[in-house]
Image 1 (cartoon, rainbow, N blue to C red):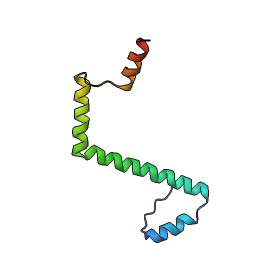
Image 2: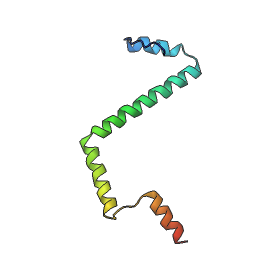
Image 3: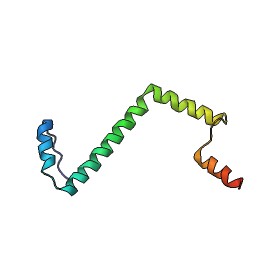
Image 4: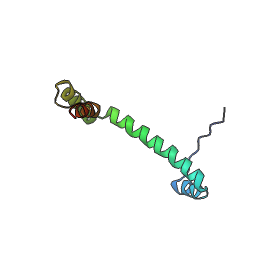
Length: 81
């Protein structure tokens, strides 16, 4: 198991370290950062009261037949051809 090291860098020092990476390493770093941003945003959405209300409203629309999923739409569309 690799050793885990936590350290604190200034943003300037981090930018310098990133600029020294080659293109492939920068792409790997970009993928890591994008994944962490996605996970952080998803966690925010899960805890956001407004988002939870919107999700509940959409679920109610589906339950009441006011909306359909894209899969239902496509199935209905192909049935009517």
